[in-house]
Image (cartoon, rainbow over all chains, first blue to last red; front, side, top):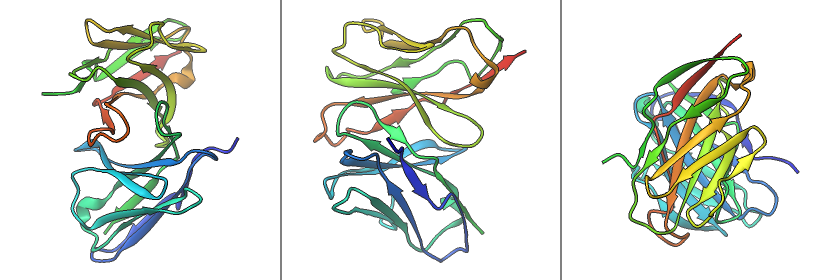
Length: 111
Length: 118
């Protein structure tokens, strides 16, 4: 059974640009959550999608957005990038409750 | 107040010894889940073990077991017979409530850096 796939693995972007990250969950899992990990703030919840609907949202500015498609794949978008957006972005796949499995992450560097 | 507390920022352990990583949590919800993840330097967050608040037995997965003491709000991870490949950051996390709750998200501890010595 394939795991969680995040693309791309690495990204370098310039301040002010926008970026889109992709996450393909485990087959059959309908919940996809996104987390940001930075050395200073640790791991923080961005949002969760379940069956194409945003079910929960963390405390991030509106520049951070996401969506989920009918095949459960999810994308997150960050507009008007800031230096502080440099982080490891992790996507978690879950059947809805219980265990949550992560992808390898996308390491975003904003210069 | 911290919801998840991991009091050991770093640990050195001799190969083949057992390891206990501490985690205490704070919640007023009756329904919650506790998770342990391993994060090697590559960055991938590897799921190790899960314990639901209503599970009466301690969870086990191979060399990993979760010592769940509900009254003490403690969820320590035990790794038996440690290996060099166990060197990594270890995170304890909690998810409270039920899926439709606004707080239904993983809340993370600060992590413990475990180094296994040969």
